Image (cartoon, rainbow, N blue to C red; front, side, top):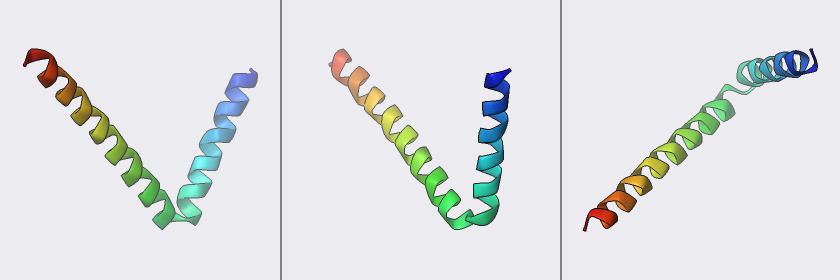
Length: 52
């Protein structure tokens, strides 16, 4: 029950944040996407080095 309440509060906060500061939210999503892409790039580098 506590997990459900915390989850709902978290979702509510995210929606509130997106509605009140869309530019900052867009920057956060962009930064997260760039971080994920960098991680995949580094995994590719790792496997290329293993195969060399």
